Image (cartoon, rainbow, N blue to C red; front, side, top):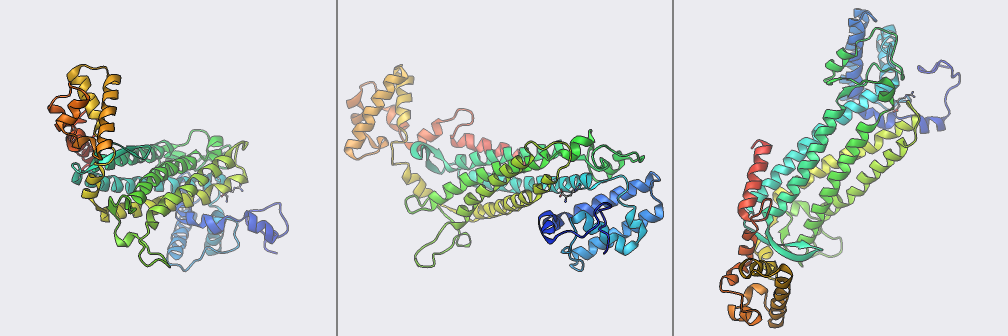
Amino acid sequence: MAKKIASARIGTDSSELLKALNNSLPFDKALYREDIRGSRAHAAMLAEQGIISTEDQQAIDAGLEAILEDIEAGVLGLDGDDEDIHMAIEGELTRRIGDAGKRLHTARSRNDQVALDFRLYVLRHDKQIADLLLGLIGTLTEIAEEHAETLLPGMTHLQHAQPINFGYHMMAYAQMFRRDFERFTSSYERNNLSPIGCAALAGTPHPIDRQQTAKALGFDAPTANCLDTVSDRDFALEILFNIATTMMHISRLSEELILWSAAEFKWVTLSDRHATGSSIMPQKKNPDIPELLRGKTGRANGNLIALLTTMKGLPLAYNKDMQEDKEGVFDSVETAELSLRVLTEMLEEMMVNAEAMERACMIGHVSATDLADYLVREAGLPFRDAYHITGEAVNLAESKGLDISELSLADLQSIDGRIGEDAVALLDNRASMNARRSEGGTASERVREQVESMKGWLGK
Ligand code: ARG
């Protein structure tokens, strides 16, 4: 029986059931690029430090390069019986180059190796997701620029509240996604430290140079404490949290797109490329895409809670429980990247029905607060009294089947003589929106400032 390459103590071949439970190759093969890159940097450092010979290092490097090419070309499949991606590549290397391959694992362990590979993967996607967020923020900002004058009722409790413009609404999302961007970037910066050379848990007696490998792999520095490094999965938890939060934001925008596509609103029309039909009702156009984006938030949350739960209470240092860290992260990363791409494309192609939005402002007396503000400002009334007088104006409008903005001066003065002619113009919805000029408010001029400042931040 062939001896397992990584078991000095274990004599017999493993049970099939053990392999089914234990082997991570079926999923951690996704890390082959990182594994090969890390091994090449490690071998170069070993040779530089005189720990292995230059000939061995050259054989290792050429062997790993060839393995990488063969995997990418689909010539070398990663579907063997190996326990994980680290054993699969080391085994293949040794089959190809002989004894030199057996020297690669000097001064390292799979514990720092997996910490390295997984961290490189997470850091790469921290950046990739941050880039996709920039694209989405750019699209939202463009829509906002185009619709800084497009009136719609702003809501609280999903009830018409005050007139705002669609640009303002889009910029609210742009701000959320900007915070998301900043979270991915700061996670990247915090975690850009090299684990390699930590070995099993305690460092190594070999005269390695962790600064060199850190530099070669694009890290800012080596990590400070090896025991922590092989135990730590915070970097993975961070990307899971960042993705869950981003997906939560995506789900809120998706929910609004679903509502706005409904016949009751008709504020937006999703392009036919982003809608699906019903198998039985020929007239239907369903917003499946935003529904799926909203739905996928569930798995992003699940993946975060799963890894938090796996890590809870684990003693230092590496425990095999930690092999459970990868699938959820891969799933969340794929979900987030696809969701961001789809959402951006869908927004780019969506039609905004400005008239329908504006019409909706005539429901719900959305400028009522302006009458109360007027009475405070012009008649010096306490806000609470002004509020009650305005309530009477709303009741009068209701009884006449009108919106408050349609009441005549005579109507308004029948409620309170202190209401002057100038109040009528203030109740107009557009005037109401443009009156909210306070910093961060909805007035079109303020929204244009927000757009400009976002464009400046985006470097546009
Ligand atoms: N496949 C393992 C994982 O993903 C690699 C590390 C294994 N280390 C060990 N000492 N068994 O976590």
